[in-house]
Length: 353
Image 1 (cartoon, rainbow, N blue to C red):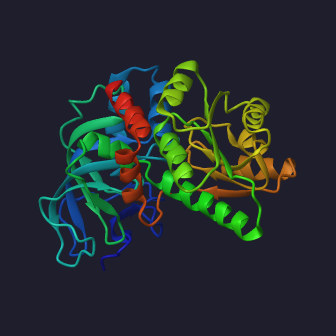
Image 2 (image 1 turned 90 degrees about the vertical axis):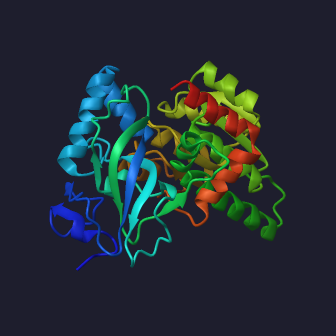
């Protein structure tokens, strides 16, 4: 029996979903409710790429070799240390007659589900990738299940740019939802205070989109937190935040002080978009009682976040960004098109490799 969530592709261990599986069956032949994609490019998630690059001291050849080894061994791209993967773009080769995804042969698409649950085969040895960037040109195939998600690539945007945006499109969508709810609640309660939002990692992909989404959703004040002067200057030039501050997000006191100094009070909403561990306690400290912390980083320790909030007696709601919110792809692409600051940051990132 063919499972809509891909259980039939799980090789080991039995009885788990594809994301939790150690190994998947990535055979080329598809079931009636599956779709096969001819892969053109992978986008490794930031936490996974950072871990691999640091492990190998920036040696691109060794990074490439390990990525190939992971895919060959596991039938998918799932970093065994971070547990994360990324996403891909490619062209639909074949769509099963019972696939509900609405895709047709020849469609160029981006998958909006993680590589950690996507059966994947690479056939070119990643010979066109130097191992030094998150985007990986390649040849091979991938399988989508009935419950997978994919978006047809827009004709007006470069595919690499679309891939970079769609890789993080869940972040701005959930940020917009959380901010809009806060704004609406204050309006109902007759509270005139503007909703304030702090985005940790504000110059990055998900961070810049989240800042733009927060402003569009009605945030009155926004703070972008970055670790270095170059990112501060870039984010100031982009004009996406009311304030831009420097702080090491791994230093709880420094992060909290930077946000509170910029706003005069802790933030109502704090969004964590950095790809390094150890940022949980600072995010909690930077958030006002009754506020919300949204974690989008795959480097987050959710045990540390929960226990840290308890130890600080912090009355905050903590959300895990799961990467999916209805309409997330359309929102992110619209922000890219309509916000010159967002587009400039993305294009600069791609140009830098």
